[in-house]
Length: 133
Image (cartoon, rainbow, N blue to C red; front, side):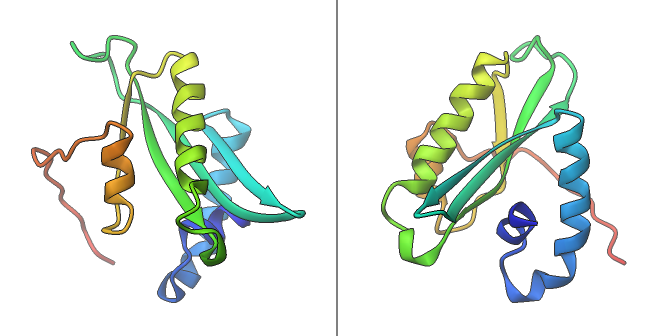
């Protein structure tokens, strides 16, 4: 549930926490999720994960697996201390060792600078169609 709390940390996302917990548990069990937690004095103070997606081979990514960075979170008292940077950097390194060469994410305004510093670029070419309930 910790990962779900990180992914759905906003009060308006509270109803999504249990479905997210169920979803991420299945990904962990099937080894489609690589995650890390930061702990200080026995307390989880941050976390981040990568969902491994079977994206299909492309010219830029012949292995066909894409990593989607998700659930990056740092507790308020530990923000601006490099926790998220260390987690994301370690996750990217770990996934690269698994052969993953392409990553994407949805960045918040607060997190965009961190991702740019880690080599991510804005990618405006995508389009989305979403059916709302």
